[in-house]
Length: 318
Image (cartoon, rainbow, N blue to C red; front, side, top):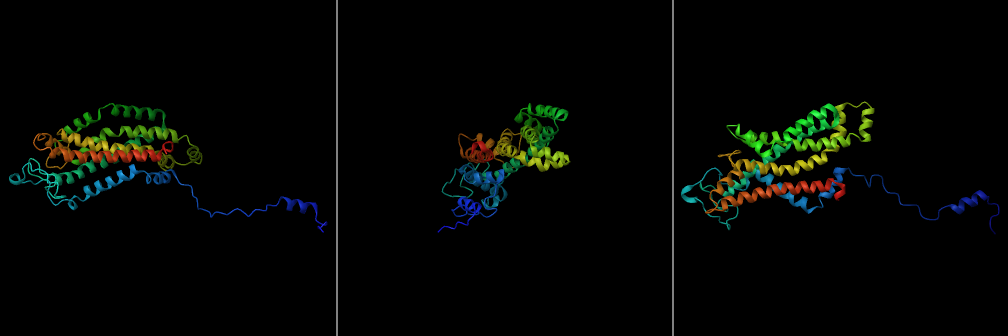
C-alpha cells in the first residue's frame, strides 16, 4: 500500500529529483587559460619551420661564440708557398684544407667559421639598438598623440626617406677605422624607423583598451601604464619585425664589407671574403662559394624564424 500520508510537496520534490549520477568534478587549475605568449610557444613547438630555424640559429650562435671548437687554424695566417689557391679537400671533414685556401694561403674553412662572429654580433647589436630606440619613439608618439605624435612622426618620415644602404655608406665613409661597433651604430642610425612605425600603430590600438582606461581612472602613473600595461601587449608585432629584420642587417653588413665600406682586413667577415673571392671567380670559385652559402643560410634562418613567430602570434593564421 502506498504511503498516503506523503505530502504534495514531498511528492513534487521526489518527482523532479535527478536520478542520474552527479557530474564529475574537475580539480581546480587543471585547465588553466594560457596567455598569448603561452599559446604562441605551444604553437611554435609544433611548427617544423620554427624547429629547423631555431636549430640552425643555435648552431650559428655556438660557432660565433666558440669558433675554436670547430677549427684550430688561424683565419688571419696563411702560407703562400704551400696553400696558394688550394682546392677543397672535401673528404677531410672539418680540417683546415676541407674548403680549400684563398689567394693568401689562408684556410677558407677557418675564415667561414670565424666570419660568423662578426655577422652575428652586427645582426644582434643592430636589432637590439633599433628595437630599443624605435620602440621608445613609437611608444611615446602613439600614447601621447597630438603635437608630440606629429613631431615624432615627421622625424620618423625624414629618416625613413633616406635610402638605408646609401645612408649607411655615407655614415661609414666618415669613419677612418671601421670596426664592428662602427657598423652597428651606422646601421642602427637609419634602421630604427620601421620598428617605430610598428610600435606606434600597436600603441594607438592598445591604448583604447578598457584595462588602460581603468588604470588611468585609478590614477596610475604614465610610466606604469606604458611599461606595465601597454608595452607587454604591443611587443608581439615588434618582435616579429625585429626578428625578420635581423637577417637583413646581417646582409647589409656583408654588402658594406663587400663594397669596401664596412669591415676590412684584418677583420674576418663573410662580406670581405666574398669581395676577395669575386676577384678569383674564374680560377678559384670556392673562395666565393662557401662564405656566400653561410651568409645565405644565416639570413634565411632568421627570416624563417620571424615568419614562424609571426604565424604563431597572429591568431588568424593558426
